[in-house]
Image (cartoon, rainbow, N blue to C red):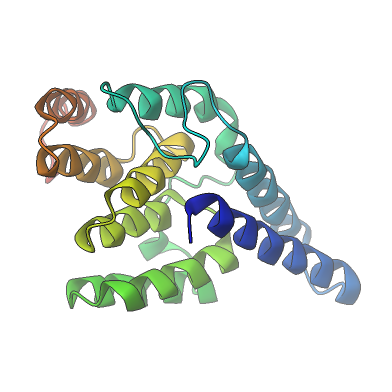
Length: 200
């Protein structure tokens, strides 16, 4: 299944959550706002960008440029006011955060298909989050699905252009495919983000 189909399925799942919230009245206003924000971001992600292939994959000889362009376009409106930059490891004990932590454990066990399933569930619970999108990219890359991985990293960076993990793993992807110029650009980006050094 290609990424636009996955995104449409996720959009349908998020819209169902919104409908269920309205039907039973059990959702508070901050949750409803996060759901609306997730719907807006997925809808925006489904819109073709300038220079993007119809399938939604990042392409071309300068493969870093569309990622950076998308990140700049989305940075100002993508983060919710409550701060999607917060790592899900430190999120309140929600189902989504638990699914995310379980997915990271599966990734550490090299169980990438299971991790992807858990990450998709986590995304259904909390909406698009750069940590989830980053690890979706990582798991797909480890399975050799390079174009899918690029797409997930691009989505993570569209939400948070300063996401250290997505910037690092995108650079690793470029190294794996032999795009040294793009890998160097990612390294320069990480150096700028980590003025005093960081693990990435």
